Every structure is written in structure tokens, then in C-alpha cells.
Length: 343
Image 1 (tube, rainbow, N blue to C red):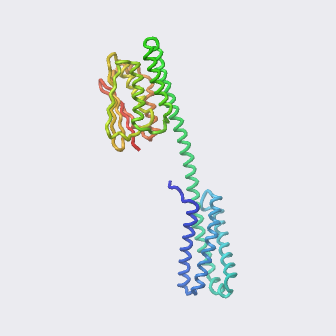
Image 2 (image 1 turned 90 degrees about the vertical axis):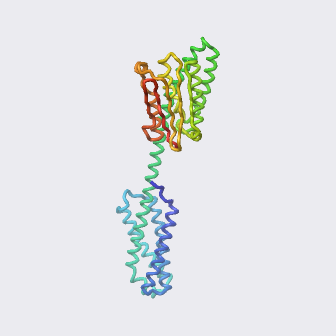
Image 3 (image 1 turned 120 degrees about the vertical axis):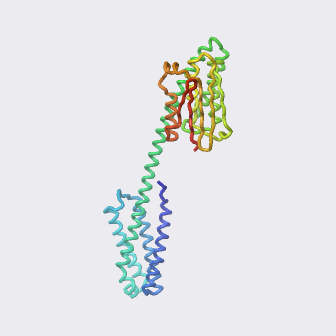
């Protein structure tokens, strides 16, 4: 819905409209053989009175807003203001000009002038009711949007809080084991984990961040996993030059890579390669994460699928689409494909 015009602009528009109506009235009076001075006086005075009454009507409409534009109160207000127009116009003309002029030129056209004033005031009242109704609806929509944003933020924060402990517990268990066997590696992993968590806590999960910033966090995560798994884990990241300005939701890649490590490495005894291929065009960023795939191990160790499910939910909350995350497999490789619209 387009934003309604401001009150000042509405008043100016209607005042200009009344001036145009006054000019038309002046021309019609001349065509009906009114003297030039009488036609000018009539048009100017009726326009001035109508502008004055229309501004008061606008104030009333702003402070009193009926559920329907055509109801008893609105109609009664228009009738009262039409009567006021007649009284003000006739009274002013009697005071300012000789009685003969009023009697000869003004009195015979009172009914016509009253009908014109009624339709003009009805038009103003109806239009201003529409403006007020649009303002009210816009305010309600803004409140609903703010509420939806708050709920979305709460849901994203909840997903983020569920992901962090999962990764943290795994890392702490590994640090505990390394403390006895390889104290130096345990110390290094603590430093890496500290840097990773510091970067994670600074991220706003509702914001889009540059791809390079997300990759720095991914590289920290992979470094931690290499300390855990040693030479068994190798990774390869390829990226096209067209992705320099790409953006994506913060911390969206780590769960995908964690999923690839879990199902690619845990069922293997040999070295594995996890590839991360990044490409994009002007409208879409694509990330393919591929890892070895052992169907028997995956079937035996299948969990609740929270990692990929959480990403689907985040993407739906961000972009309103449910088809931005997909998976494919062949007898040896499992690939997760992430699509990020470039807004």
C-alpha cells in the first residue's frame, strides 16, 4: 500500500482545487450575464468560505474516524457545514455589499450554490476519510511488520543458540583429549576456538555479510577441525572472481561443512577431501559443498538432521523461499547446494 499524502499536502491540494472551482464559478457567472465585479465578488467570497470550512472539516475528520465513509455522523457533519456555508456566505455578502446587489444577484442562486457546496464538502469528507483510513491501515501494517521482524529475530537467535553448543561440545571434548596427548595442539585449538567464538558472537544472524567475511570464519572452523582430525581432513575452496561483492546470511556455511565432515570423515579411515565450490552471477550466489559418502554409515548414524533443517528454516525466514538448499548424491559423493539470492 502506498503511503498516504501528508495532511499539509492534502490541505494544499484541496485549497488549489477550490481556487480552480472558484475560477470556473467566475466564468459561469459571467456567462449568465452577471456584472464583472459581482461575479468576482461572488467567486472569491464563496471560495474563501469553502476553504475555511474545508480546513475545519479536515480537522474533524482527522480526529473523528468512522468505521464507514457513509454513516449518519459523517452525513450530518456535511449537512451542517453546508448550512454554515450558506449562512457565512449570505451574511458576509450582506455586510460587505449593498442590499440591492445581494437581492438581485445572490438570492436567486442560493439553492444552486448550496447544492454545489454540499457536493464539494461531501467529496472532501469522503477523500479525507480515505486518507485517514490509509494512515490507520499503514500504521497497523507497520506494527504487524515490526512484530513479524521481532518474531523472526527471536527464531533466528534460537536457531543460532542451538547450533553453537553442538559445535562447542565437540570441540571441548577434543581439547580434553589433546590436553593429555598433545598439550601444544590443545593450546593451539583453544586459541583457534576462542577466535572462532569471538567472531561468531559478534555476528548478527539477521544481517547479510560479505562472502569474504563468512569464508574467514569458515577457514577458522576448518582449522579447528584439522587439529581434531589431523592429516585425515583436507579441504579445497574454489571461488570465481565474480563473487567479490556477494553477500549471504552470517554463519550459514559452517553447519553445511560440519555436516559434510560428520558424514564424510566419521565413516572413513583414509584421508578425505571436502570441496567448497563458490560461483555467482548478478542475482544468485551458489555454494556447493561435496564430501565422500558412505551410505551404510550414514544410514547407521543418521541423527535428527538439525543442521541442514536449521539452514532451510533460516533461508525461508530470510528470503521467503523453501528451495534454496538442496542435496544430491551418487555412490561416492554427497553434495549440498546452497543458493543465496543477491538482493
